[in-house]
Image 1 (cartoon, rainbow, N blue to C red):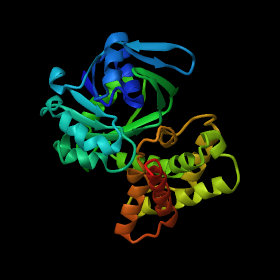
Image 2 (image 1 turned 90 degrees about the vertical axis):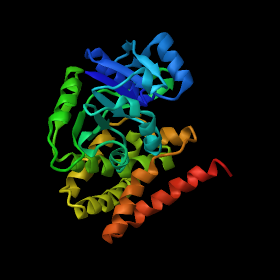
Image 3 (image 1 turned 45 degrees about the vertical axis):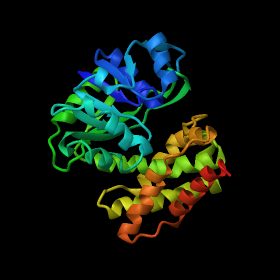
Length: 310
């Protein structure tokens, strides 16, 4: 298949570009970071794995979608607040046969894509892989295992588009699940992110430290409870006990893993709080559910972002 990775010069976009290229797919990167594009076109996309090995992917990297042309699938890995702008830039990549995929953090990215591209062409999902940028065109692949789940954005839509994209990802060695209940899976990860990302960003704690028993971990459970109540209110069957146990287990195995929101805060970059805890607050307001802790986290992270300009 012919893939374009929008945001492919970033951490997770770079990982997916590298994996799909190694799996034999035709891959191009669309991004707007000139230093990264130059490095990738000169030296290849370099991905450092946890075992010390290095993958070098020779792929086209450009800021001009016309240079890539229409593709079989476009995967969006941009930050949520760049989704609309990135989709407009990516229009030449999409025709009637193209599947548009969001594997971005948070809730609402696929709605933005559906305002630009036909909803029946959109596939959405989550992944539990993680990575961070070491430098222009160089990615550290910090977690190269775990599930990736995708399914159709439009309720009741056929699975064929998701299955075709999933087959390519499987050829690349990724653990894939295709499901019509993908929105439930997105909310499961959203709940995880609500509990772990802003707390890590505000405390500067790595995953392993965040997961140590004590008052802070108890606080994470409260965040989890609020977000799960909202998910249940939306009709997604998610068990609170399972979420708490899963989050504790992931943090317990997390070691020195650094949350994406902590990376953003360390770089004094805008965070994705508005599509994570902010999404929970918006849905809670619509449903009439009280979520004071998630609301407080939105305010605190927003205040932290403001502090960089004071």
